[in-house]
Length: 159
Image 1 (cartoon, rainbow, N blue to C red):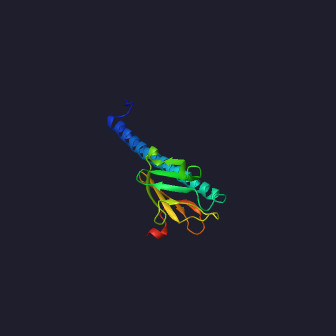
Image 2 (image 1 turned 90 degrees about the horizontal axis):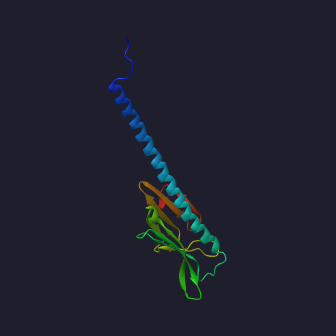
């Protein structure tokens, strides 16, 4: 006579193995989601910089649009000069704190802002670092050419 079915140890071992596989899969999936979220936000910031650079060709040199960075409040503001009020006003706001993303740093010389001249050349080259959990992205603006790109690694000049 044969016993049909599984022993308790066989069932427990099966559930333990399935639990380990599920945990590994879940952690891998969450890491992919975090990476995707950061990449999407990096490209949004990069697109903002590209739009300001593109608009600089038609702006007056005396009053360029500014992209201002506020790491302590995780804010990025685009400001344009209002001639009527004789002051800069905010035309675009990227609030990273709404998605729990940290604006770790934004280094453009000694300023917390960057602007572009009529040739698309930035006031200063610089790097914007954002982070979420263990994922970090860098948006880099090269000084001479104004090239803007996203990287997973900090620029070599930081070494």
